[in-house]
Length: 263
Image 1 (cartoon, rainbow, N blue to C red):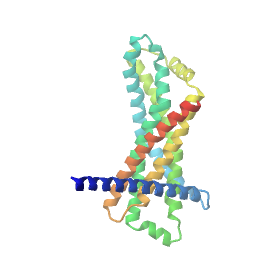
Image 2: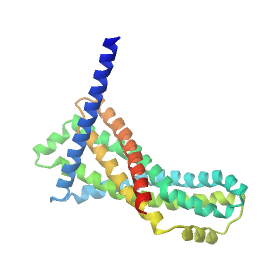
Image 3: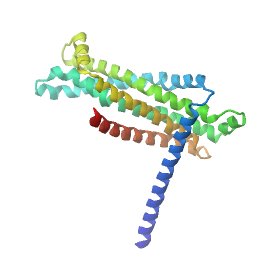
Image 4: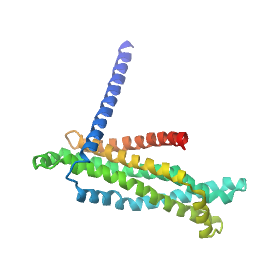
């Protein structure tokens, strides 16, 4: 019995040490990013390419998801509001729910699954096949070319995708309202615009930059530090998705607390 308890304690201590070790390595990785991002040369072509891959190629998935979010939220909320005779508040409720919380978090989670895993697998395969070492031999800074450009691209593209998802979700809400009633498009959009204030948009937009930064940084960290062997590529991609998704929830929780405190 004592041996079992001792082994459990040792495994817990080992896992805690590994967690703190990973946190320290990620912190150093982020510090290196902020150091490298300010130094020339600037890899603009690779940055634009990554913006295209991360942003434009994610539009179909974000479009479908955003439309369904607005449609389902409207259909699910309508019966409850109807019980209180508050159906006229439906456009405002849908818009505020999407802009403040639902669209940023769901879009970030989608990008964590699609983008972060892709970055982790891509850089992991480059590490395993020694392409990163070949870049260093060729006098190319692999961190600058591979990591900085991808983190900057996710930091810029995720907020733009969230704004796009907000608009598509609001359009989905309009379709949902008109399934059971006939609401004029001008009336719907007027009520949505009247219900939204600067304090609804600003905090939600700011946290999306942190979502994008951590999605890119975690994907790059997991791929850039993948172990040797093809099996590590899959582990890097899987670990990137899990860690990035968890970081999104943590950032969102902190953002809500800060918003309530200051706004």
